[in-house]
Length: 67
Image 1 (cartoon, rainbow, N blue to C red):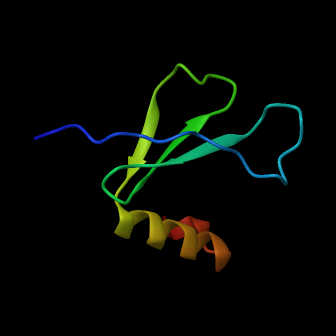
Image 2 (image 1 turned 30 degrees about the horizontal axis):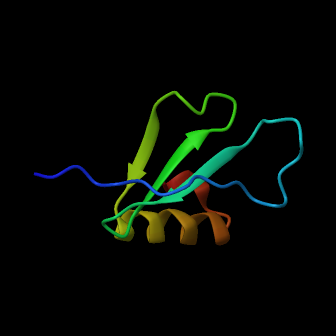
C-alpha cells in the first residue's frame, strides 16, 4: 500500500498566539491529518474522510463525548 501524502498544515484563524493549538492538513486520500502546533515534527493523527466528517459533525453538535 502506498503511503498517503499530507498537504500543508494550517491552524484556525480563531487560534490564540499562545501556540496551544492543533493544526490540520488534507491528505491525498481525502482525509485529514491533525498534529499539535507545539510539536510540528512530532506524530500526527490521520482520519479517513468518513471519520473526519463524523468527528467534525460531533464537535459541531456539541457532542465530543461520542467521538
